[in-house]
Image (cartoon, rainbow, N blue to C red; front, top):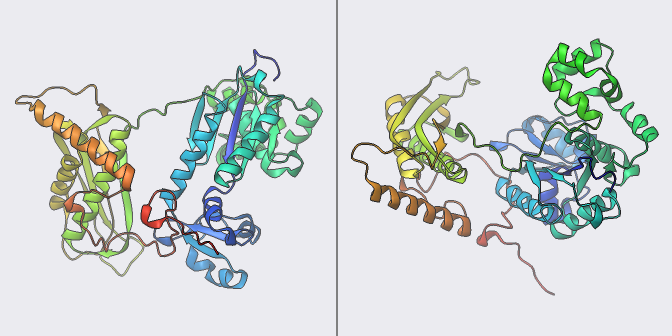
Length: 433
């Protein structure tokens, strides 16, 4: 690679992640227009290139595109988040074979530090092409790779890799000629820069800064005076001055929310209780995953504010815990206690959820009067066993009885494909002829 004193980052991004996961297990979907729908099959959260070409915007309600779907054969699929998360984990595992320093930025994006790896590859571009080939071979998912001297440039290079076919899905600013780099930056709208949103881009255009090149050439001090230190940092990053380090360990969340809209209206306290217990278990799993404890549980319910014909009601309450905990039984118990206090009969509830608050590391637990240490140890072992069983055999293999079995309130997922990689009962079947 080039100058060893320079920082080099790569951004690996899966193309149309959700759609690509569906196509990996159902090749008949390739070259067909496909949309993946949000919770309750509401609106488009992922679109294939064929659907984008038809002018369907992100977030378009499914019911509004049914005629278009029939006309063009658009396939609408329910979200299969379990599958997407597992495929994402597989890709991250592959990326860690290329660099020990990986930041998982989102379910479909990761930054890699390429510092000190110059002797392993003829060039960063060769490495990027090898990443593409291995991910495709091991997961059947297509990725683009952007490489730059800063995270912002790597992100921008990934955009170039997607939009300019001549780069064959790998764009590398670290080895690109200055003339070609300038030619590209002149043709990319300033709104495509990482961290430059609609509001800031509008103000930049009013100042005559329309392209990425304009922003790169703008005085950083002027950007700081008008927009603050963040845009000054972005300006420097576009110049190849690395200001953002990899975040290899995500900072613990200060609050954890678990909430869903129901597939159908819920009126009974029993069904609301089932949903609240389920959400408490989901939140507890995330809480233990970041090795934290919860000091208070907030529970809320609400009706459908878009149904003017229905009487409206929403309410919430926070229940403090006697002792910080990460035990599903404690979290669900507090949430159900709160539900009893806010539930009102006669309303058609559309959504409920919980928020875990006052989070702290599980190493900072304070003793309380009459603290039962053996009970606490049993709680930790019980939750560890619960997580281990559910990790191995699938979520909800073991769950709280208060979460119910029928779960008629669960969100709609009428067109969900099988969880091919995580459920024994949904493994794809192969027949030999």
